[in-house]
Amino acid sequence: MILVFGGTTEGRRAVEVLEEAGTPFYYSTKTGEQEVPLHHGVAISGAMDVAAMTTFCRLNRVELLVDAAHPFATVLHRTVAEVAECMGIPAIRFERIYPPREPDIIWCDDLDDALRKIDCKVLLSTIGVQGISRLKPLEARGQTILYRILKRESSIRLAHQQGASDAQLCFYPDTAEADGVLMKESGTSGGFTEKVEEARRMGMKIYAIKRPETSSIFHCVNGPHGLRRAVEHLLPPFFPLHSGLTTGTCATAAAVAATLRLLKGETPGQVPVFLPDGETISVPVAYGPDYAACIKEAGDDPDVTNGLEIRARVKLAGQFEIHGGEGVGRFTLPGFDYPPGEAAINKGPREMIRQNVCRFAYSTHLSITISVPGGAEIAKKTFNPRLGIEGGISIIGVSGIVKPFSEEAFIESIRKCMEVAKASGTGHVVIHSGAKSEQYLRQRYPELPQQAFVEYGNYIGETLRMADQFGIPAVTLGIMLGKAVKLAAGHLDTHSRKTVMDKDFVRQMLGEAGCDLDISDITLARELWDRIPSERLPDFVHTVVRHCLEHCTPLLPNGKLEILLVKN
Image (cartoon, rainbow, N blue to C red; front, side):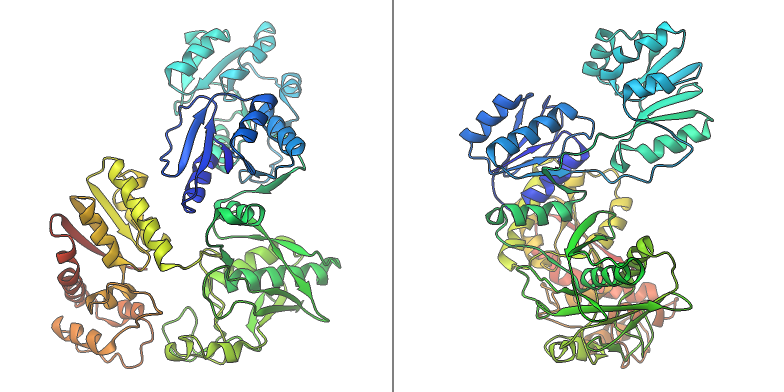
């Protein structure tokens, strides 16, 4: 059993990660005021001291603690660390992502240090109601203090108990006239960057209390991918299937390790890799005579590249360059991120390599060559040859992490999400294929709750049948062109393992749209966006959507179905 301490954005994210396992866990908050949808998790509330937490862990057979509470919840952090150490239970600290400490901010070690450093006429405090009584010495010195707090009854009541008057209170997101502001180093999810920018616009002195140091007993993560991988490592049975790393992440780790050895003479056994979502994970690496390497780890996803060694060689150069060596395929057809002849290292991984390496390099004048021994032979077992990628595997990956593929488990997760969407009370559910389409759809429907957006991956038919079973009255299906041309041809499961683009059917749809176009040389459906004349695009889009509706509408006989074709 896992016991999570939350009440924060990180707590909510921890719930989302753990719910994917379909395994019970406890989610604890101090007040119980945070509303978090729980399907397998059990909500508990109330503060725990060491004795109470120890008793709870023993009675409920807790095997892993996750501290996802506010960074300044120091009493809780100490309590979790002490219980973990005394009981021999591993503990994870779900940290926030923190921007660099900038020199124009007056940094304070703690609140006492801030009291010594604050020098302004009117101070706006944003450190919360618990700090009001601690700031009374400033009032005694004649300074005016305003307190910005949450506009809720419990916060206002506590502010009054701490000695604040109504005239001193202002509420988020309102601003106040002051020449100084006191804030905590609350990280990106705590709005620290936005608060600093607002204070700069208003010409305020900025006083920031540094976040407390984290006990060494914790395994620290700062994002959902890192949390899942830490849970998989510390409590393997919790997740039925384990995640893996993309080839892009492995290539990045190898490149970082090779750069550290070249420029600093360091050869660590693990290197930090910054993922596209901003979080950091640690990745194991090894070293050869003139290269660093990372073993491709697919987790429980049935990936033929699992176990391959991905190498990186780094040398000084006149500019920043990324090349493909042995075992890395080359594009032979147009339509990819790079023209024919270029190494099959996609745009996402290239940018990931560049950003990570440049964090450690004294100079960006580096030439990096990625190679995969045995990659050419393995590539024959993939779709690469049919797509026009020859001579090796592709270096790919958008998120940096591979979630395990299990048809049964994925479909069950869709069912859980659909059930939560129904329980949220929304009459409109938006189903999407993943991060790219979801980002656009959330902007299109900002009024819908988070639970209304359900990822179908490739299982369009199954998802629509579930929507009908749950009695969802209105469904929007967001789909990108690659999946849409497969769906239009009647493939309700669009996974590349089961189907590829049917060019003959695409030609038929182009004919129906009055578009005479030679597509014999296209590799990916998304090329059609640039190949079809702009005046014919609306007709083609309507044709694709019409065919999709023919196959999907019967699956939702009692609801209204809308299909949106989302461009990259």
